[in-house]
Each structure stands twice: as structure tokens, then as C-alpha cells.
Length: 124
Image 1: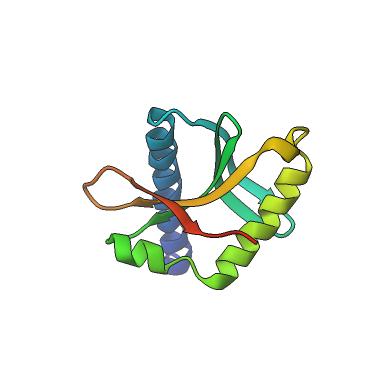
Image 2 (image 1 turned 90 degrees about the vertical axis):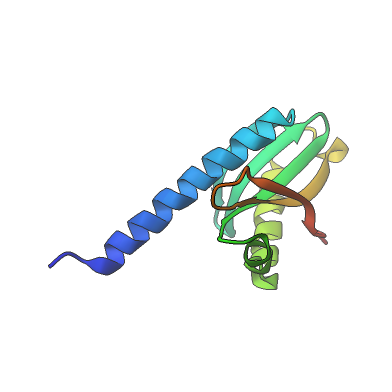
């Protein structure tokens, strides 16, 4: 008998990777350059880092049935993890002093173009 938990995790992971790919495409079409995908740090992971000029987007990608569910999926604990990972990423950027950071979300919904929500939360 196959491990259902593992199969479910793999399906969830494939959906997530597809969602990140669609989110990255949507942001590129808006003029952003994707700087990093699934950026891992010891404090957490950032789904996408996008940049246009001195504006850096720290993007959380959520694949959900509705926009409301996607927005509700970003809990305060997630925000802290994303902020901590962002601090580590930012410390390694030679031009960090000029950069403006914005925390956005891209919701990947069924049969719709991804929805880009700016300023999903305010950083510290």
C-alpha cells in the first residue's frame, strides 16, 4: 500500500512549485526581475524575491481556492519568519541602504490569472 501522506505532500509541493512559477511569470510581465526563488535561510524561506529598480518585493505565494483564503493563510508567525529571512537576505546586498522593501502576496486561484496583492503586511 503506498504512503498516502507522502503522495499528498508531493502533490501539494507540485502545486506550490507551479503556483510559484505562475506568480513569477505574472510579476515578470509587470516589469519585475525575479532575483530569487524559494530563498532559504536558517530562519525561514522566502517564496520569491523580485526587483524593479530600488524596489524589492518579498513575495509570499499562496495557492488557494479563493483570494480570502489566500490572504488569511498568512499568519503573524509567517510574517515574522518572512521578515527574519528578509533581514538575512538584505544584509548580503551591497546596495541595501538604497533599497525599499515591500511585502506582497501573489494568490494563485483556480482558472484565474494570479492576483498580486501589494503590502499584504507591513514590515518592522
